[in-house]
Image (cartoon, rainbow, N blue to C red):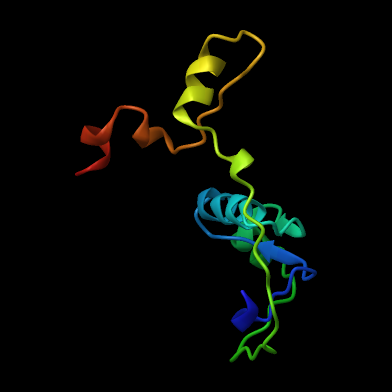
Length: 110
Protein backbone atom coordinates (compact mmCIF):
# COMPACT_ATOMS: atom_id res chain seq x y z
CA UNK A 1 0.00 0.00 0.00
CA UNK A 2 2.75 2.41 0.94
CA UNK A 3 4.60 1.74 -2.32
CA UNK A 4 1.41 2.72 -4.17
CA UNK A 5 1.27 6.01 -2.28
CA UNK A 6 -1.64 4.89 -0.10
CA UNK A 7 -1.50 5.82 3.56
CA UNK A 8 -4.08 5.16 6.26
CA UNK A 9 -5.62 8.54 5.38
CA UNK A 10 -5.79 8.20 1.58
CA UNK A 11 -9.21 7.80 0.01
CA UNK A 12 -9.15 4.86 -2.39
CA UNK A 13 -11.70 4.40 -5.19
CA UNK A 14 -11.89 0.85 -6.52
CA UNK A 15 -13.43 -0.25 -9.80
CA UNK A 16 -13.35 -3.05 -12.32
CA UNK A 17 -14.82 -3.96 -15.69
CA UNK A 18 -16.28 -7.28 -14.58
CA UNK A 19 -19.57 -6.18 -13.06
CA UNK A 20 -18.19 -5.29 -9.65
CA UNK A 21 -17.09 -8.71 -8.42
CA UNK A 22 -13.40 -7.87 -8.09
CA UNK A 23 -13.79 -4.31 -6.85
CA UNK A 24 -16.22 -5.48 -4.17
CA UNK A 25 -13.62 -7.98 -3.03
CA UNK A 26 -10.95 -5.25 -2.93
CA UNK A 27 -13.32 -2.97 -0.98
CA UNK A 28 -13.81 -5.72 1.59
CA UNK A 29 -10.10 -6.56 1.79
CA UNK A 30 -9.14 -2.94 2.41
CA UNK A 31 -11.74 -2.70 5.16
CA UNK A 32 -10.51 -5.99 6.66
CA UNK A 33 -7.01 -4.51 6.88
CA UNK A 34 -8.31 -1.38 8.58
CA UNK A 35 -8.62 1.03 5.65
CA UNK A 36 -12.09 2.56 5.95
CA UNK A 37 -11.71 5.36 3.42
CA UNK A 38 -12.47 3.18 0.41
CA UNK A 39 -15.24 3.77 -2.12
CA UNK A 40 -16.61 1.77 -5.07
CA UNK A 41 -16.98 3.58 -8.40
CA UNK A 42 -20.71 3.64 -9.15
CA UNK A 43 -21.40 1.70 -12.33
CA UNK A 44 -17.84 0.46 -13.02
CA UNK A 45 -15.15 1.84 -15.31
CA UNK A 46 -17.04 1.13 -18.54
CA UNK A 47 -19.96 3.30 -17.42
CA UNK A 48 -17.52 6.02 -16.42
CA UNK A 49 -15.92 5.93 -19.89
CA UNK A 50 -19.27 5.83 -21.74
CA UNK A 51 -20.31 8.96 -19.85
CA UNK A 52 -17.21 10.70 -21.22
CA UNK A 53 -15.73 11.28 -17.80
CA UNK A 54 -12.09 12.18 -17.23
CA UNK A 55 -9.45 9.46 -17.41
CA UNK A 56 -5.75 9.94 -16.98
CA UNK A 57 -3.34 8.00 -19.16
CA UNK A 58 0.37 7.41 -18.83
CA UNK A 59 2.82 6.25 -16.25
CA UNK A 60 1.77 6.80 -12.66
CA UNK A 61 4.39 7.67 -10.10
CA UNK A 62 3.59 7.46 -6.42
CA UNK A 63 5.23 9.02 -3.42
CA UNK A 64 6.32 6.38 -0.95
CA UNK A 65 4.25 6.57 2.20
CA UNK A 66 3.40 4.39 5.19
CA UNK A 67 0.34 2.22 5.62
CA UNK A 68 -0.18 0.47 8.94
CA UNK A 69 -2.59 -2.45 8.67
CA UNK A 70 -5.05 -3.06 11.49
CA UNK A 71 -6.55 -6.48 10.86
CA UNK A 72 -10.19 -6.84 11.87
CA UNK A 73 -10.84 -10.58 12.24
CA UNK A 74 -14.41 -9.83 13.34
CA UNK A 75 -15.24 -9.17 9.68
CA UNK A 76 -14.72 -12.86 8.87
CA UNK A 77 -17.67 -15.20 9.33
CA UNK A 78 -16.30 -18.48 10.65
CA UNK A 79 -18.01 -21.82 10.03
CA UNK A 80 -19.42 -21.67 13.55
CA UNK A 81 -20.90 -18.21 12.94
CA UNK A 82 -22.48 -19.33 9.65
CA UNK A 83 -23.93 -22.49 11.22
CA UNK A 84 -25.50 -20.42 14.01
CA UNK A 85 -26.78 -17.83 11.52
CA UNK A 86 -28.55 -20.49 9.45
CA UNK A 87 -30.65 -21.31 12.52
CA UNK A 88 -31.49 -17.65 13.25
CA UNK A 89 -34.52 -16.36 11.29
CA UNK A 90 -33.40 -12.76 11.94
CA UNK A 91 -30.15 -13.22 10.02
CA UNK A 92 -30.08 -13.20 6.23
CA UNK A 93 -27.15 -14.77 4.42
CA UNK A 94 -26.45 -13.32 0.98
CA UNK A 95 -24.35 -15.22 -1.52
CA UNK A 96 -22.62 -12.68 -3.77
CA UNK A 97 -20.87 -15.22 -5.99
CA UNK A 98 -21.66 -15.25 -9.72
CA UNK A 99 -24.53 -17.52 -10.77
CA UNK A 100 -22.25 -20.16 -12.30
CA UNK A 101 -20.89 -20.94 -8.81
CA UNK A 102 -24.30 -21.97 -7.42
CA UNK A 103 -24.27 -25.41 -9.02
CA UNK A 104 -20.95 -26.44 -7.49
CA UNK A 105 -17.50 -26.90 -8.96
CA UNK A 106 -18.70 -29.06 -11.86
CA UNK A 107 -20.37 -26.00 -13.38
CA UNK A 108 -17.36 -23.75 -12.88
CA UNK A 109 -14.65 -25.96 -14.37
CA UNK A 110 -15.23 -26.25 -18.08
